[in-house]
Length: 92
Image (cartoon, rainbow, N blue to C red; front, top):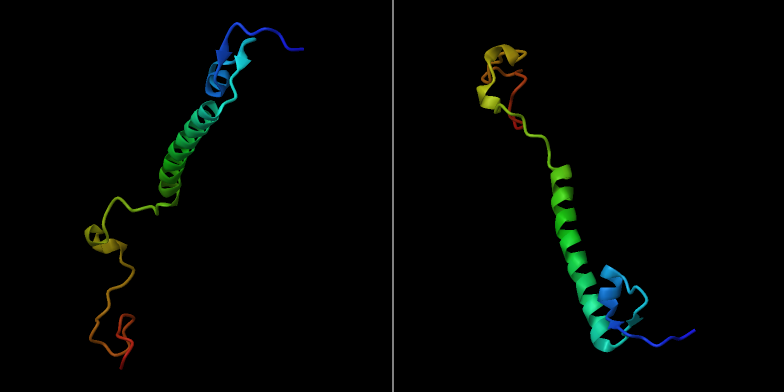
């Protein structure tokens, strides 16, 4: 079951490149190195996920501003001074 090891590799090396029959070193330094690499990957993944999420939730902004729209696009022209106007203040 246990054979003599000719090479000892860290956990991080074993995960990334494979152990290929070598013994895996289980020490505090090896475990902390693998944990630190995992934490860095999680932070990078969160950064890209937040950028993607913000891009997906961004509202569509029309290419032309409302002021540049031609007059034909307005369905009616209304006099704001008229009492029963469609556009009037809420207080009378």
